[in-house]
Length: 316
Image (tube, rainbow, N blue to C red; front, side):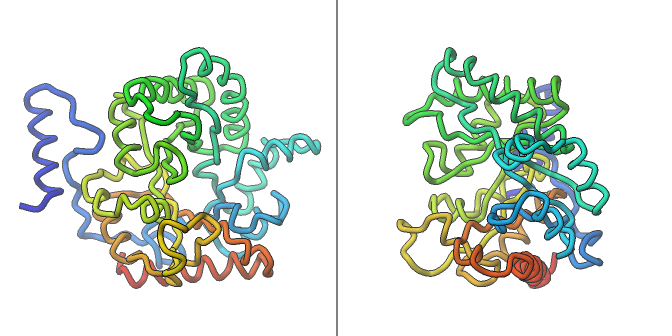
């Protein structure tokens, strides 16, 4: 019996006995039919440009670069939105411009300092958290990334899960936006397994995580964990390759490379992702300063082309 099938039957048993199935263990989906709705029939998923990939450009320029290259979506950062407003821009108008160019916003990066280690500091953080949610909602983002940069070493998972649940409630009820949890090798909450644990313990139907191929690699958590997930748990899928050198312990975000230019088994990862039933964005996320020195339109064009090449190689 395949692992996913076993998990699915476990979820079904929970329904029969009246218990709630976990977010990560639902009845498996039939993914034998591949519905390629995006990129002129070349992709099952919309492809998104994380604006860090073309960081030196202005926010408006990044939107135009993404549209010109042919992306389906764009994923900006909170500091870009704040700077845009500071310079007199209207984020709701920008959201309309993004939509008019044929793009949408699946996620904004992100809710920094939103999960501090004490209840007192959590309450103090909510003013900035709400402002970031408001900015993301103004451009019609679906999600905002919850970044665990302040959870603290040896964090209490039960406590973090409760605070994450509160963020979900605030986001959905006050701003119509769904906070999703990320993991970062350089923070205490560093692996997909840890992020999923917090999401499950949040005990909320809208709890979600954001896998990142690069951080799955450098955190040494691996990629097999994707086999255990239902696609409904995933808000967005961050996508990049990793080089063979330097060695894994020395890799940082600046070493991200185009999909297909590194050593990660990206086609196999996408096959697994497809088996989960995931329908959200594949977001190209490259923080490589060498790319920032190049023609940014060409960087975006190349990133999209190489992402599609990997998708085609995966056959999904």
